[in-house]
Length: 378
Image (cartoon, rainbow, N blue to C red):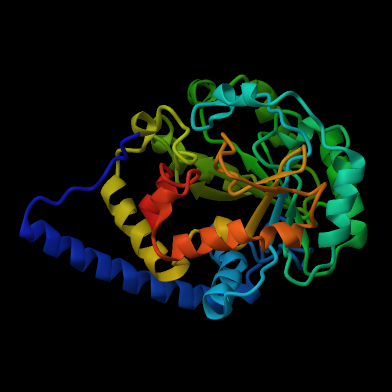
């Protein structure tokens, strides 16, 4: 699939682009420097009593992600040694109840039968990673709606019982099943970070962007959540900006911030080239400036794609794909039934891919060649 590109046909435009890149670069350095200084003192409106997540707000969320993924990248670049993921995503059920237009789920679901992860397999994963000094975030979801797993809270509690004080648990949900009763169970399980994907502010836009869900039910659940105790759970509302919703983001942010939630915008990506309508749903306003900003950020702060260096993903059958963005699972690197997480993560193919990424050879990796993430950021 051809990717949208920013074109500067004249030397003047090229010069202006260089100046803009330099300005953005300097601005990013200053912004990150300031955030680094004040981050320990920031307190969120939700989760403020939880030391694992109290510093994470809408405007510090991206910095938090950077602090999680960058150490492994720097370690590998310096030593080329073994790594353990800083973020582990585990798909405990391979189903969702939505058909969001920015997600490949509706046309990739036929690739696997419905399956819920076996308890023994989940416990094996927990036994290896809970308490591990390098693992900072455990996410019992990946390419699914986690609240469809009736055992989700039990699984979270199992991990938390063995987790170290540095480890947090995050769940990302569309909130369709986030009733007050379900939220209470999540609270009791020890959940630290609750991220809600809600990319619309009006019913019309919601029905277009997040098809298959009930606008009234989701709003009802969130209004109830705004009145629930959230001092131990940090609540983030995620807004994936795209052409059909971009104009609503300011109102969305004002409204939900007023309800006491953190709001974080996310850039659209083509999910390793699998999103069929990617070019049609890209935001139009500010697209050129955002493209330059992402490229500057990537060049200075990421160097390589973090999915192969700091993140790891386990599917419901134990398979370990290279990347959670690859919904076609074109690169399976092992299975946790046969090997440990560490063995898979440091296997010869993983190491080969890391070197290929460092060399800029993304187009030679089946799961990466069509991905907009490295093309936009790196």
